[in-house]
Amino acid sequence: MFGFKTEEEKAKLADYDRLLAENKDLLAHDKAMEENRNEWMDYAKAIEAKLEAVETELIIRRKNDEFRQKLAVMK
Image (cartoon, rainbow, N blue to C red; front, side, top):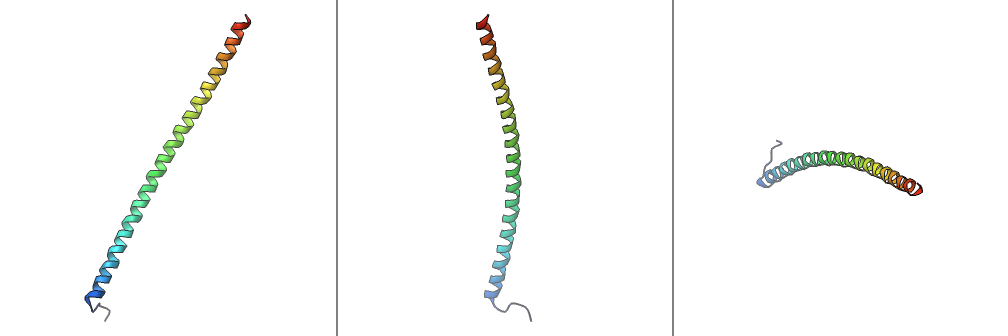
């Protein structure tokens, strides 16, 4: 009663099943890519924080060196 009667209808059903499977695969792939992107973003943020700390330290050292040079000139 509910069976497909023609080869065309069977082909359409097979096509729909194939498209559904492809879409599920794409969704799984997209999810994996998003997780990978999030991992890289976290890594980049960690590196950025380290670079900011190093930059701050270098600025402090430069100012200390400038201050020492001024003291040396005053002596």
